[in-house]
Image (cartoon, rainbow, N blue to C red):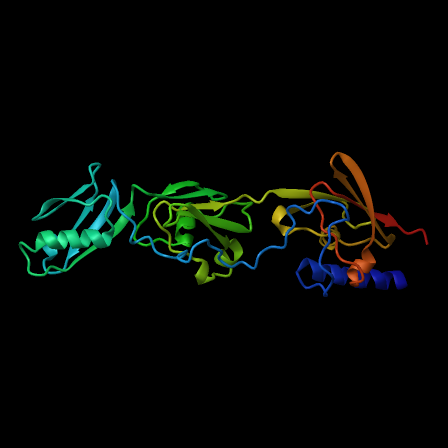
Length: 308
């Protein structure tokens, strides 16, 4: 009767742990003397950037050859046109013919066209929009369905770029990175929590992109932990590496302990070519008297049998 009650309580606690509702316990620990690389606590999911203008639009970036522009002259709609910058850096417009624009920002192009039109129109009102940055495409690499370059149509956001790349592929990691060239010529990296962006729909993370931005969605490789002995479903348990699996999570994934399980569990791990053995009491971990244990790829857990 006591054993049945223990199993019921244990199963309930493990189920709560699997869904992120386990009672407060000390922070997970790595077995003493073992490397901790790759098991830093995940960030809170905020955007981190090296510059203050991380979310700035690319509308003021200089244009180049093969960029497609939309030009509007509000005093005369007949002058409205869409033009592609040629390899020699020019566009062609009605009335003023060829205009050199390569290396100029849209604002600077507006002023140049306005100056040329003043011979024909009194105080012309001109707008220039980059429809597609053919010379500086955005690239999406990593765990997406169609990695590669995409064009810019108007102002494109991070979610729109991922959508144009076919969406996220299986095995994507917890964090994606937007790489871009800062004003000082150096590359800056902006970190974005994928689930906060795509699942929670956090609008602050849906960055407006610039020409030449690179979106890197790293693949989150899987790891296997082997569970043996007195558990309901012995065998290999798989996690994504970024999930930082712990002993309780693995025990829950294996269905919990059997009614023959003792409190003891043995962890076997190969470190620098040598197998090391560690002993734990999973009941103390469940009730918070001992910190949960962070596990690594290839670890073996053996839940021991009770003989009493």
